[in-house]
Length: 258
Image (cartoon, rainbow, N blue to C red; front, side):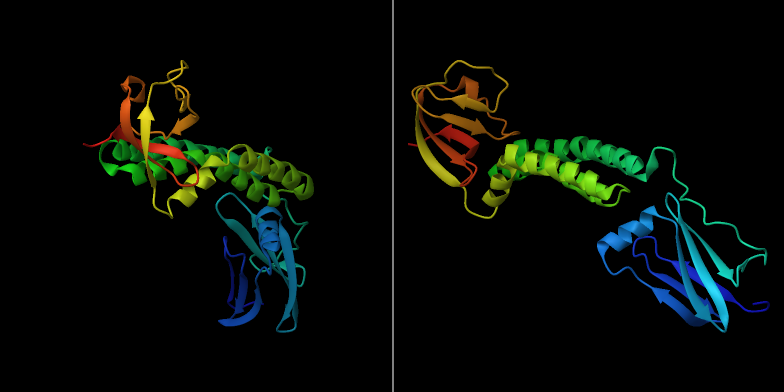
């Protein structure tokens, strides 16, 4: 291949590999499924093809934020002409790429909680109104199922896929079953909120920091986060409550008008 111009490209996210010889495409491959694409992120691979009468091999070695490419022509490196050795393993640290992705996702989760939800909660509490309060509640109550779903994706991309996916899917299913309120609140955003009268006689004794509290001689009700309501201080009387249609979460409680 002396004097020939060889160009190899690999898409990090798409997994597409292209080889051109003197500007003419001689090889192209693209993963046919998400599973195949995730394998390309994890494993070092060799793809063999014929071009211009030569046996060629495209080697791709995954790294952190890029992929190392090398082209083998008739058993020799296209770069320096020397015989090639065995295919090297991915350049990941001892704890593996999955652990690294979980660490990065944890940092992003903290950013989401403190730099996204917290400011939106302040806005909803001060000027946003009931629907904003409900929307922030959805973002807060769904972060656990969302994080569990991300774990399922990471498990699918790991080496011991079967075991890891089963474990991660169990965590995701448990989060959906144990924390269903977020999905009901999300559905509430699609329909009008319920406005109901309430004859308020007071609250049963209970911790002051809980969202759920029992009415005197009445049912247990749940307040949304970031309502800004000082509901513990309400005097007995006639009130109007605004709540989600499916979740029944209260987003506003105010004295009834004349």
